[in-house]
Amino acid sequence: MTFDRTMLARYFILGTQNVTDEQMFYRVLEEALRHGITLFQYREKGLGSLSGVDKLRVAHRVRELTSAYHVPFVIDDDIVLAHIVHADGVHFGQGDGDIAANIAASQGMFVGVSVSTQAEYERISLLPGIDNIGIGPVFDTKSKADAKPAIGLIELERLVEQSHWPSVAIGGINQDNLAAVLATAVAGAAVISMISDSSQIENVLNYWQQF
Ligand code: 3NM
Image (cartoon, rainbow, N blue to C red; front, side):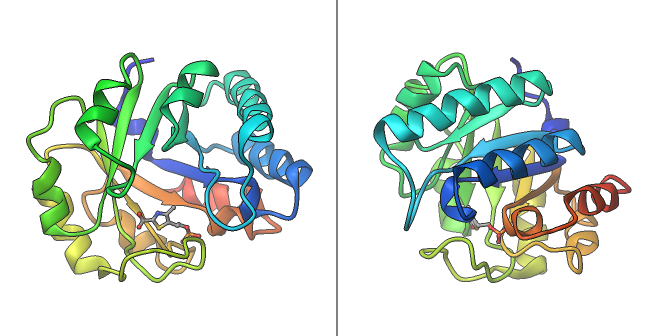
């Protein structure tokens, strides 16, 4: 699958650690797929996350579900798993090892990289093989224990305008600040809790689709 910036519009991230159990993970994912997310990132990381055969089982099921809904499937920080389950893309944080080596090992998949500061942007700005960047956290987030300090909307705007890649905003995005985030030049927003914590996923996505 070739990367297109429109895939970043409604970018949903989830791991089993973000919900009560594996069945809930599939329910939330399928509801989000049914109601219009444009990309799904499987991010199994942090306290309570799965590994080994359990993570492999979930990734296989995610591949089936995302394929059924024709939604691109990205895996966070696990190139081997991404190749095994034929994911469409991979995503790396700045702490996920040697970025250039990771990109080289991601042949055939599209690549996203997280950026939080000017220095981090400059560190990757000349690397070939990147398709998009995630910029954040824009606001405080409850979903990532080791998140960097929130950068705010002004710094988001500045980094987006400088970026020569399509950029997606991430971190603490909710229905109250979504309009302001999407008023910048971002290609979209990436969220966990705005969807995973909602009892009204259909309503959230209907609102999001108005932008
Ligand atoms: N990465 P929520 S913030 C996975 O800043 C992730 O790179 C971030 O979750 C970064 O939408 C974050 O619930 C968590 O705030 C996003």
